[in-house]
Length: 390
Ligand SMILES: [Fe+2]
Image 1: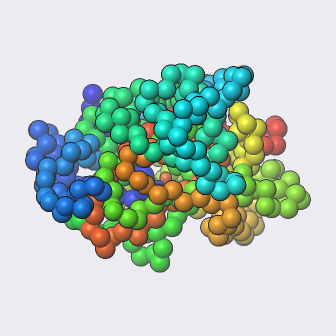
Image 2 (image 1 turned 135 degrees about the vertical axis):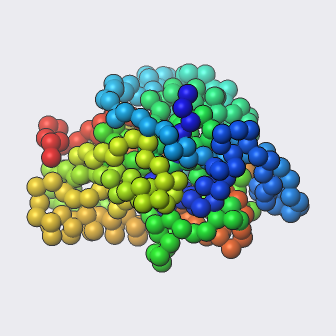
């Protein structure tokens, strides 16, 4: 298998990684056995401040320069959540949970006492439905899941859809399907938002793909003792706050989502400097329908949405900026997830947006995690029959 790499492109905010650091690691880790890395601690280790070999050094990001893939091809996506609909108790996987806390009325749930790694297929189906309904679900105490390693991550993720290989981000050696987030004490804040006032950047992952991700998982191997939370917002609830007349108009609209800028950023030599698949852009409805719950959700984001097809540019900018501003400031439809050690967070990328919160730079502590990114269906327009050509 060729070696590869990855980054949340401009994902920027969602899980930023600093390229200068990553490249340093890459140079020392790729091509031969990884060098022994001496690093600062993970969350629990931070208490001791002892320097030791990093337990997850084998999962540090690399950016091989010789890794290239053909364009993605369409595939049929059958959503596992749909099978749970016919189950007499679609929440049976929570029967042995010790705690199930609803973070907010609109989205978010924190589950304790359920081992994600040992759920059978029926349980996985139910998890997919729960995530589709709650938008984001954090599972605590998942050391079993995390310590099973990358082959398990891939097997687990493939159950939910074809695994996405990110075109520009860092990945562990030989595991291009794992998108890594990484920052440590040697990082410099050199991603594209370095000259922005805020690291906040609401987005839906890789929305420029024809079939963007559905259920998505993120977990951390190492984290700051505090900070580095991730915020989520319900694009379903955000849509419902708009007037019926405006929503009816939005349903007639479609927008172009582009990965070109993300690729260009890498080609400029920043990040890992790799573009392993040529960039694409696709047209998606501004209001999409979830294939299982039928819920309608806004589907635009500053990071990848470029313009509304068929409108004058001033009209397009005005509408998109109105929607972005609405998403940015609607704390009443948002939920913030704190990363306790061994937390696995699952979200439905079709009906939520998220942003990283980069508030821990001064602590010089490491934040290192992996994302499993199964792709789902081509976004279904809420308005039946909407023409999705550009
Ligand atoms: Fe993201």
